[in-house]
Length: 93
View 1 (tube, rainbow, N blue to C red):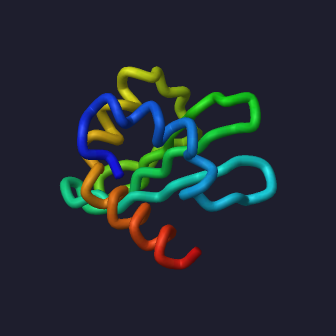
View 2: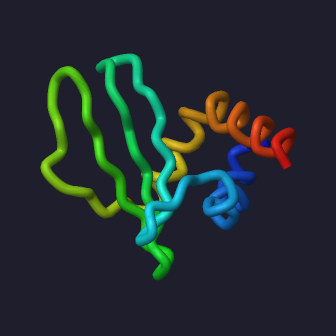
């Protein structure tokens, strides 16, 4: 669970545990409300994170590299949804 901002690094370390895998990378897709769409965060075997946005206003043409500070801000903003995913994955195991 992400209850404090300093717990984000632990979540990112265990990202693969909560994300889906497509054979190349791990990814986590989050629904956005404003604008309505999705934000997908991806992690490659090298440890590099990227993101991709697709919504009613625009669609990123390609994945965008993401700095750790910005990624932490995104994770913090979506912590309620991510915490639900963490609880569901814990119950499923």
